[in-house]
Image (tube, rainbow, N blue to C red):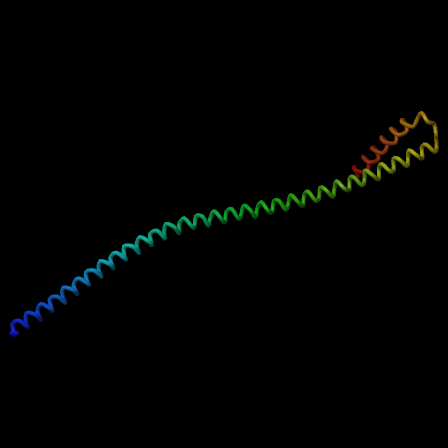
Length: 140
């Protein structure tokens, strides 16, 4: 082989290496550009999804707040119901006591005047008297 041939082979090898290096460099730049574009698109999607998630979180917070308010209202209503039940029980107890007193007074009246025909009249008198007495007690 002649020197010229060797020089041409070396030049061809150097040119081939330069062309391969240039092709690799261009391919890397294209890959890098494509990755940057993909990353930018992903960031935009993340930003849009973040806004949706924040709206959903705000809705969840609002719903939880409404649930706590409803729970508090339910507890207040339950307490009111319990108070009213106690009040009704107290009224029933007072009514039972009043009925016992009426019965005792009617029996006492029967012992004072055992006339059989006046039993209904005596019971009505005792009932109206008890109502008047209870009215005076409530007015105090």
